[in-house]
Length: 240
View (cartoon, rainbow, N blue to C red):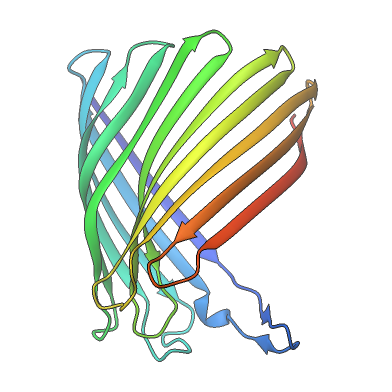
């Protein structure tokens, strides 16, 4: 009746140089990091359809340069815990929901630690054959690179509707909403964002897919100019 999982993840992040409009190059290698995170979950099967669980996470992110260009030590240690439940009602409906708390402690004593409540979950619903609806809720920590700022807790809600039009053609519609909660000492206002997307996947044959995607996102921050981002993508996916 007991279920347990353990995940260990290592992440390496590298930044290239930035080029300004006047041709000036800015080195960004002080942002290069190496991170490791260990997550353990234990759950108890009350029934095949319901499994409550507890989860704990500990991680360490280390910057290649101990002190960055702003004079700060941004390496950090993160700990967090969550409690939630998995639900499985068959092929039609499944998902999970969890709430908890996370704390990121930065090595620099002059920077405020990042902490907050977390909400994470996923719901998969298939009302009929060929139609799939996915709802996702995600909480992440975002490290800042501006002098005097630590970062933010980011809450994101996304939804996707997938519809099989033909046996080899699937259409997708999506919507997103986000809230970026900056640390109290950053001097920045919290941000809100929303967006929409659409896409098609054409299964050319058993080995090759053609994908087309378009998305739009708008970010708002009181006292600042709104940011708008539009993305268009075409791609081929090879399977073997």
